[in-house]
Image (tube, rainbow, N blue to C red):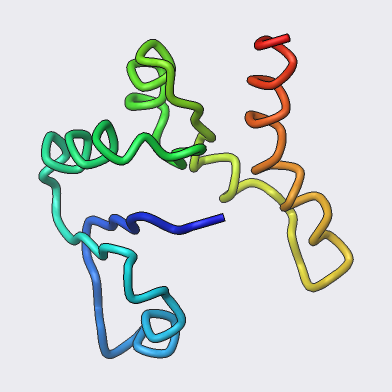
Length: 103
């Protein structure tokens, strides 16, 4: 898996400096609400999976991109290593669905 971009409405670099340092050098970090530019970059990159809000998921799916609703991550009870498999399944589910539909 290769992380292409991380977008957020507000980024406090001081608060999450440790997390930012763990991102690959090739990953773009975007801050703000310029959704059209983010969508253009997403369409150009054609990632295997896009984690996004509900409002963007349907249009991206219609364009053939696989998506995962970001809200599902908020309501998923993942605490420590015990639920790590559940978290991995959230990301694997749309990829498996696309593979089954392609057959």
